[in-house]
Length: 263
Image (cartoon, rainbow, N blue to C red; front, side):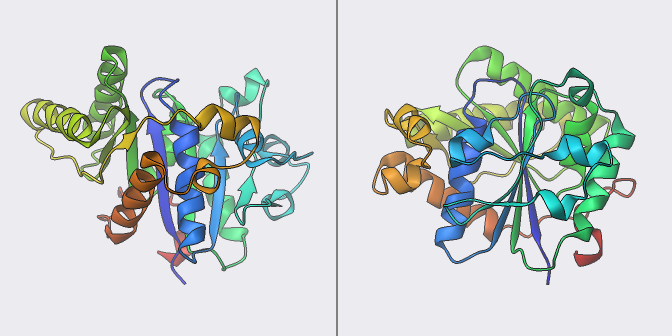
């Protein structure tokens, strides 16, 4: 079975990336898919909070060879399996490409029963972020209308194009006022990327703001379950469908892939 791998990253923090990732995973579960969620933030992981679980072991223990990756996969009450990231460990936040490649390879030791892997990266352009982006079939860069978010999203895309020689990824406008604003934000980013990097971005839709997001975090329940008819939920479901319909192009020749023998 082929496991579709989706990496979600952002140029800067505070753009709602983890909220989006959790609810995207939930949308895929609701569509009947078996989903594994990897909280790939090596230093400030917080997906456990949003999913209402607490793991005594995480990816940090795997890196220290204390446990194996299959031993830390945690079932959540929402039907999503979780590989928890580490939080509060500076040495893990600074792992290099070799450490990131080691993590990626270990995913092939997991049982062959997942339809989708969601990789929720840390913000920025650190070596593990770039390795995880390179190792997935579908790459999503999340940004908002904030000028610093736009600049940092472009910087991340630029590195992927110029340094990794990648040319197939999505730019996903998040926390927009409405669909029109999201489409305009995408068009503006796509125009700049085409003009300066000679690459065309993919569009999967945009995600509107939703006031109940904070409530969903306090309740440790994905918004898509708490507010199934909200505009944000509708946007997330549309994005989920678009990403699953996308075939993705070939991997970078030099990159290590998640579930490498299954693609």
